[in-house]
Image 1 (cartoon, rainbow, N blue to C red):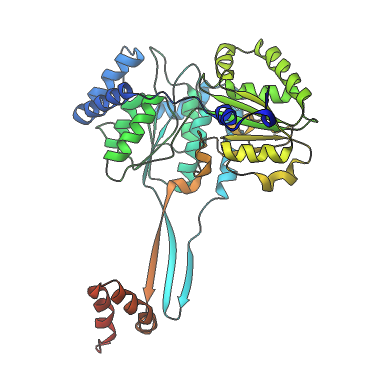
Image 2: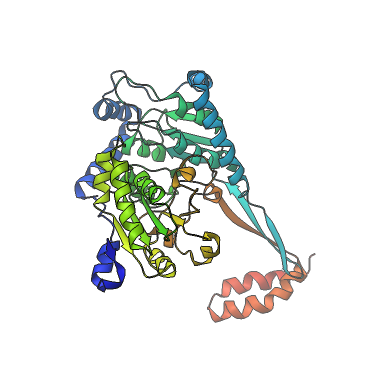
Length: 431
């Protein structure tokens, strides 16, 4: 237990410090080599990496349309129903974010418009690993589908002689994915950024990944003209604010659900009651014994802290400074504290709102800013799949009225040609 009131400023900073992101020069050099290989050799480079990194014997790049169509028949009714329910909720929530064009007459004869246009081609990356991640497909794919993107490419690695899990394919089909690519890592990111014979070139790349994926996204967004990425990424994290009325079993479960993501994950509890912290510690130990990923969770707990605070108000101040990816409020009358929330990717209110709900099926997006980026970045939302542009149309009389602002400003800035573009129009008598 860390007592905030008894700690020095240096100890408080150390308590909230995140584990270092281990991205060294070796990772950068390796990724640069992969990008160069994909740029020169395209599909052949991807096939080679599938053999090298994923132990594929007869690798391929594209999934057939027939496999997408038939994927649902390979699912259990329970899993298909779960994906359908999650898809429906995620779509319902994100439909609220559909942008509306706006028009205003700023002064007589001067019409200004704000319009939105979908990004035409987007790439969605879904990490591989020990289990399929259809939830990651849904969180990205629903937004791409609602935006009206013409090309939606999904890339995911496949290990050994396995096939892409039908849950991934079914979720992709629901979201209108046009191309499913069987490759992963930095090579997949490079292929989507640069384009190959089999992989369409995209304008923006979304999705989480390991240090090689993250490095590839960063390097390519800096070197490929017009390519964008979703947001900076760091290890997963959760911060729980709890009062003495909170259930320690619930708190422990929430902390462990995030700790099992990876050894570099971080979980923090801010509680106003020392007995609650002690009971939570005991609950963590009990629940760890039941988890299949207990070793990973224990490693993550080394980066984590249970903090005793003076008040709930102080807890919100500390949380705002930390800027968590997930913020869970297990406090009585939690709704009245919402105005105190600052710098959080997603907020979970009340004892029966676990972070797992947002990860899978409540409807909000689980692609969130981490590592303190919630101070400046938002959760993934529909607007990330659009670009906005402006339109203006002005009558001659409108321009005459506007000229009393344009001409003095152009003169002050020494831009005579700007002023002349207005004058020649006003002096034109051929209307």
